[in-house]
Image (cartoon, rainbow, N blue to C red; front, side, top):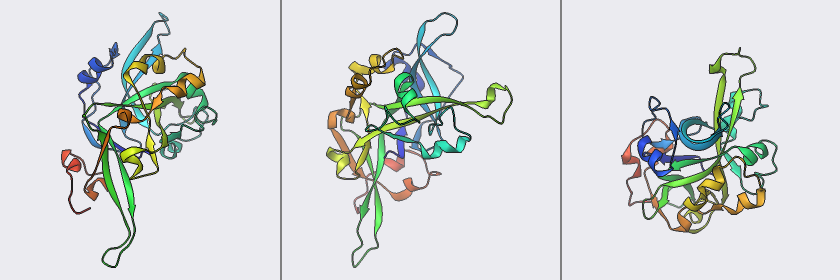
Length: 243
C-alpha cells in the first residue's frame, strides 16, 4: 500500500511542470514531509467547464481517502486511500472514477515500512524507508478522484467534498525489498491521455501505469519519527545508519 508520502513542491512549480491552465492562487497547501490519509493534497486533473464546454487542466486540493458518491459517511475515505490496479476498473467503489475521473498526485517520494524480525537483542519492529526517484524528479502518482455530498447537509456548497485515492501494484526493485505493494505513476508522455476524461478504454489506461521513475528508485532508512503524523519537516528524510 501507500500510506504516507512527501509533497513539497511549490504550487507555481507544479503549474509550470504540469501545464496547468487553472488554479486558485489564494489556495495554499504548506510543504508536507509526512502526508497522511485525510490530509488535503495537491492534485492535477482535467474538468469540462459547464458553461463553455472547454476542458481545463487544474491544480486543486483533494482530501486523501476516496469517498464514493453513494457512501453514507465521509469516514469511509480513511479506508480507501489505495485502489489496487488489479481490480480498480471493476470494483464498484472505483470503476466510475477510473473511467472518467483520473488525476495525478505530485510527490517527492513515499514511505514504506519493512517488517524486521525479532532477535536476541531486539524486538520485532517495522523500519520506515523513504523511497524516491534516484534523480530527484517529481513523481506523478496515478490517482482517482470523486465528489461526495454529505446526505445530512443542506444545499450548502460546503457540504461537497472532493476526495482521491492512489493506485497501487506489486512492488519491484528497491521498493519491493521493503514492502510488497507500491504506488503506480504515469510517465510524462502519458499525462495528457491519462487526464483526458474522454479517454475511457480500460486496457489502454492500464497500459499507462508504470513503476515510478521507471524503477530507478532509491530506498533509504529513516527515523521512526515519521510514524507519528504530527511530526513534519525535512529532517524526516535524514538517513539513519543503525537500521
